[in-house]
Length: 178
View (cartoon, one colour):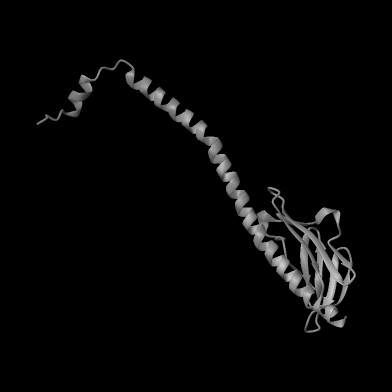
């Protein structure tokens, strides 16, 4: 059985010739080399996480925008289109539409007020993070015959991730009149 050495005897038995300081310097040096070796990996991981996070938020807002615009236009009548505004009557005969102002897409309510459909206006730190831009230098909204053409690009201003919303919708009431 081994005999346990008391702590003060152990301290006396160690030579104090600088080996502990050298080992400390070497271990700190190795730790710093490992830190600097993994730092690019860590920063790249954080950057890709943020891109993925903004892509998910952008996809949610983009899908909501796509579905709302398509469903409203598909069942509407009396559509009037300008470059940044659509006004129409929905299936209940209530005046509605869409407009783009200052990089935000708005849904025009029946009382004439605008409700933000995209972006996050006035929400503190993330104010103006998502902006609506014209897609391929086309107007936001156009009319080609019976069809309404929507060309919108929803973009995250922090990292450039974008969600295109390009659709051509022929309203059902106009198809039935033919």
